[in-house]
Image 1 (spheres, one colour):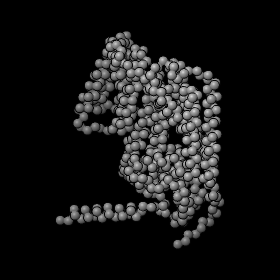
Image 2 (cartoon, helix red, strand yellow):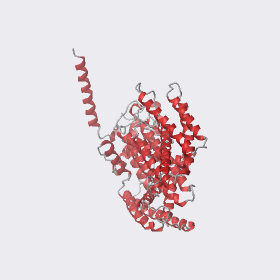
Image 3 (cartoon, helix red, strand yellow):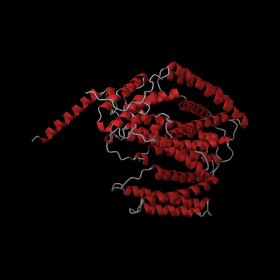
Length: 574
């Protein structure tokens, strides 16, 4: 049945032939890469001459160094910087990545997007985390440089982004300030609200790019001008990769998505790497939007007219695909191994951010200082220094465990009834902790009055832990007070240990804690979600014209239904 045209005149259509030729896109990307690279090198060289930094990298107090690691980190950071600047300023790459993201959203591959983005951000966080100790050589004393503070901000920012994109994947939609929508959607300037949102997105992306530039600048200043040749070689590889992406209309993210699906589902993704096919699918989706709207009821004619206009120009398709009403509530939730890998990435970023905040604001240092001065000779020292190091190890691990219990451990409901062994071990650890604190008072700090306050906080916490009626807020408060008191005591113990011992002990225990916090089976607070049904991510919710697996899905549903009916008849038969 034919539907009548709406009385209101349709808005003028935008031209659909505004797509640039792939060869033109590749040449424009080549020019942009040349401008970006040589402008960056010129800026770095000018900064180096202004600083007049004459320190030789191999002529410091540390005799044994991991010499290859800072060069690897510098090249990695420069590659990430080029990628960020390309995404920020190259409209051809923005259209390419947006088309691929739309193709994934139309096939309900939210977890593939979350996995790809979280893996990117996790890799960036780990690189910046390893860069931190090398930047110490550019500052005097225990102060921090501007770049180190920017790295701390970036670590927290990436952890928040990964949590946000995981939340969007669980809900299968994204809000106005949702990470998935901010990453994929276009920049709009139609209203003051859209203009402010676009400015926010540009500021966040620009700030992220600037942080990687600062890291490259300082690492080049540290390693000397000899690394410029390696940077030039890396640029040649990058610009070839970027131009080929535009020439063949294939995003780099497609490779990561394919690896993601092979890792999580052991099967390759449906062919979404060919962007010509994705573009045709998008045009079919937009053209057939008119037919879909003609079949709606008359009481929603005004809404249909707006949707027709939106579908025709295709500008708001990302917002439609990420709308909260598109995916039914019973089809949302986690997706088995896919969501587990995203959880691991979020854990890594959260643990790295937490340990960095603890070091910089708690101890006044940066983590993993041993990778700059690799000297593990604690055993060769005298017995008193070894005893001090062991006491320091116990107290430092206790603080890290308390941070995990306070911030990275989910508040579980009542445990099972067989929880006596857990109480036994927890009380034994509290007693041992008390004995170590008393040993510190006796041997190292006989006149330090704060030691007894630490003992008091440990005793109160132990009594609170066995009381079922104590609110969890009181337990958390007592643990926070204990951690603050232990931190003051730990900073006092730093004067009794040489710097080499501090670097070695803190680095080894930090690595052990990071591995333990990431691999711990106890869920984190952000991993505990109230989802009713865990559904596979293969559920298709796009346009019927794009449904390629409908026959197999229908056959599988019929077979499952027949099996359930036969089972029911067998159970009911006398």
